Image (tube, rainbow, N blue to C red):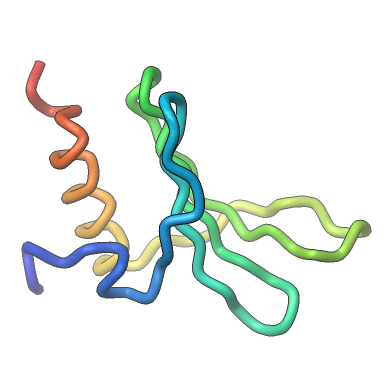
Amino acid sequence: MNKDITLEDLGYKKAIDDNNMLVYDIKHFISDTDRIVFYKELKAFEVYRQSDSPFEYPSPQTVNMQELQAIYNKCKELGWFDE
């Protein structure tokens, strides 16, 4: 496994980067987007699938080992392990 893998390497694109959160998206199918949200102040993240359909709510998503490594690397980059 490549220890330097990034979310961008896996096809995710940065959607939001502000003082509160950092969001990466990857489009699946026609109307589904997998989203990884890093909450900067909380030092927490969540992974879910967002649908364009108004009849579907966001649903939790599984994370594979490459995604987990990329999330870990992003947490290190954010300095979450420095304290």
